[in-house]
Image (cartoon, rainbow, N blue to C red):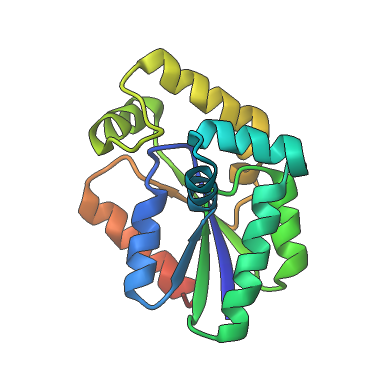
Length: 179
């Protein structure tokens, strides 16, 4: 069973890769969903929960919780591949590589203007329609190490064209890596 991580800045198109992979039988584990689930339990915003979890359990608690979840999924044997969404730091990559010998990283890139338009239209709880807030969020991601993750990826998809072109890239990637 292959375990693969997807990285990229918000609005780049990571979730679309996951959707296509899920249609092919992969199971998706979102690090963001782990934070959102915990936020719901705590009655906090996702931002508060992400900060509080890290204060309480260390900087990489979300990755550690994700590894635990994947190990449980592997024991149950329900999926041929597992996709981890939202990897943001080189430490997280190393943790996944230590935990899963076949681990690879796919990164998705799109320029800031395109990503901002996508984020404004998708209207998730933690999204913004304010460009300065968007830039600030990008900077937090970059400070956490996402740029290093992207630069160390096994594969990089550029998502700045039409949907059909992006879909073709995704399918070629999934076929190449047998996902």
